[in-house]
Image (cartoon, rainbow, N blue to C red):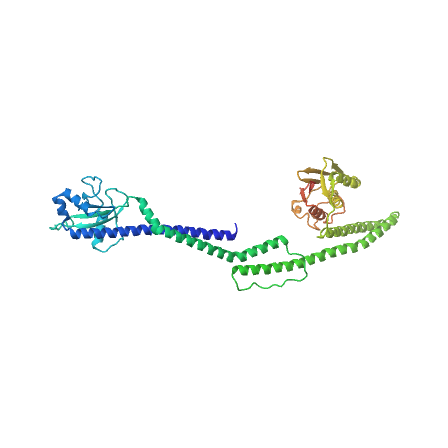
Length: 503
């Protein structure tokens, strides 16, 4: 979910909740207004009755039956109301309701007294809710007047109460229709208009606020997808982020300057890397000729002095010089090959073949050397394992692995070459029974010029150059493959070269 959508949904949810709050507030205000207006009307009505008839209790005492008819006549023009005459203790003496009440039926006196006090003194509540004797519901708007007899006893200042109950409308649908017609309809229309206006305003705000963020996201995606482009040789101008503008503008300017700085540094690194590879390649090419000439001269001297027993000491010096010259020539050749493989323009020339057959050829090539060292070199034949590989590079990689295994496998040991197809991969393994590799050296094994196994006595005196496995790893990367080494000191080493199998 994008930031724009989250902001829009948040604003929309806020608007909907606000609209619901407004509707609820309108409904509560309508109910309060209705109760207050009903209470005012009831108070005015009771005030007129008490002003006109100051002997209500005496009228009831003289003829209770006619008094009930008298009360009903007072309510001819007061719909949905009931009038009660109450004793001082809250007992119902007379009622206009249709319900037959028990002779000792009482209503709660607290609301009655509160309503009577509010009618003659300062009002503490906008309306009073009390008992409805006929329905005994949760409450109804009530009004009351305290009644006194002409002769007031000191202990009995209030002789009774005239109690008016404003009941809910007999048809609830009428109140709902009134609410809809007078308040809900216009309120809902106004709320809907506010929501539409707020949504349009929110969409405009979201689009305006997040537009720089969207542009910045597009620039980040483009930089991630396209990289930094080819080197131009000219560093882009770098300026500090502008102080003006909002946070998004400053973030965008800072990112652009950061990207320009990275491009400039990338160009510099690209040029340095190109200079390094070109320098290594040129150096390797220039050193091959003098080293080849040196090796040839040393070999000639070795042949000439081989028959002269008096030159044995000199011949041993020649052997040391010849061995080191050959190692130096091999190192120079490996450096040149690795520089060539690192070239971005280097392309493979893949050929579809059975890698098992290539392993057989490599085993035959190293058979004589393995026999001289007393090492059994074996190639396991299996089902054809087809892969598209560059033959020359693949042979170079496997030959480096076998050469490395021979250097560190003592006489009586064993080296096994195998190829098998598993799923979508062709797995080539070179396993030896040599001294193994320490766990601390495994993580650095593919680093260039790293010779971790020198601390383990090699089977031959040639040692390693530290570039063989680096070349193998680079060849595996060019073939979209991977290289894995498992080893333990004293238990030998197993190198796995996994390549994509032919489709």
